[in-house]
Length: 221
Image (cartoon, rainbow, N blue to C red; front, side, top):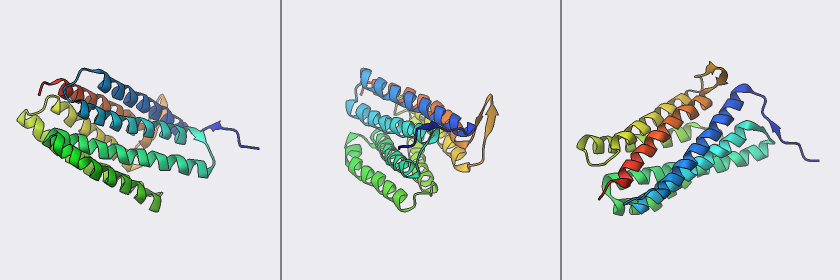
């Protein structure tokens, strides 16, 4: 007889699952919007849509992992797929930044290399499955590169929406720092641990990134 599926009964895990679900929905809505707006850069729009698809999938998997009780084997499979999604999402995010900094030729050249790096990150999580610090380093390096690139574009006025991108990346780094701390928590009506707070902060970052991408996609070449 199979074990019935049960909701988690830990308050902090419950809020983590719910905020993960909201994060997944917001990321999915952004990807739909990017594909719907009139745009001068369809390759870029599709690239970022895939990045947000990966983020949406990772967040949805996180909602399942945090929200339900499951056998360890099932949880391990969920986390593996989640890290694969995150690895490819960060890789696509980096390629998106390369597009804005150096152009489409550089981005298309970098795409297979960055996807290979994303898969290498996933391979590292299989070797060290309980070491979240691997993702922290991987994400931080990509975000710092993008922050410097978009900061330069914003200061030189070369890209519409660059300041929104800077804000979104800065918020993403702040959210990652909160999550990596493993200790920060907050009780406001409900209990939020470092994971739940990460999701709440990251939602703001996604909205800023969406505004920046909208501005750049609609700007005439």
